[in-house]
Length: 194
Image 1 (cartoon, rainbow, N blue to C red):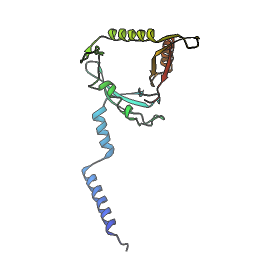
Image 2 (cartoon, rainbow, N blue to C red):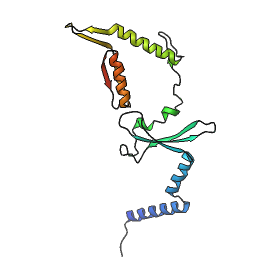
Image 3 (spheres, rainbow, N blue to C red):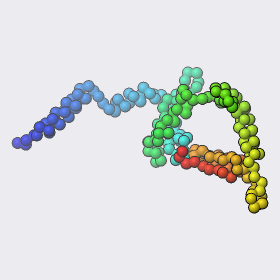
């Protein structure tokens, strides 16, 4: 007859008690997962997308539902397990992609703080675009170089630099570089995963 050590006896007792407890309670992991999914995303539309943060191209699954008023509510965003790029995993930035649409801290209108002021005021988009355009023009006029130290014509703007977004498409990057080169910018850069 085989002897059972005290350690083996305790292991077998714990495993048996756990199995009896779980089976007696009717605890089924697959069923629990189905119930959780039904509560959160039952009847939701599944849409496949790409994470907007960098150029890696991780795939996302977004679950949305139509509200009674016709608007669409975003319920959940998660990594796509069928993607060969990220295999369902997301980096910390990608995991917070839902905050882009549903954050209660999101600023929905442009804000402006005048020089010397202590508080921000809500302004229109036209005001902001005009302000940015004026600053670009002022900086370009102030720092534009027509000739270098050797007297060669260079026609460049040394006072403005541009860092492009890593989520730019090829077309957006091409368009941005053409517009900025037309202003005389020479300091153009694209970020990868910042």
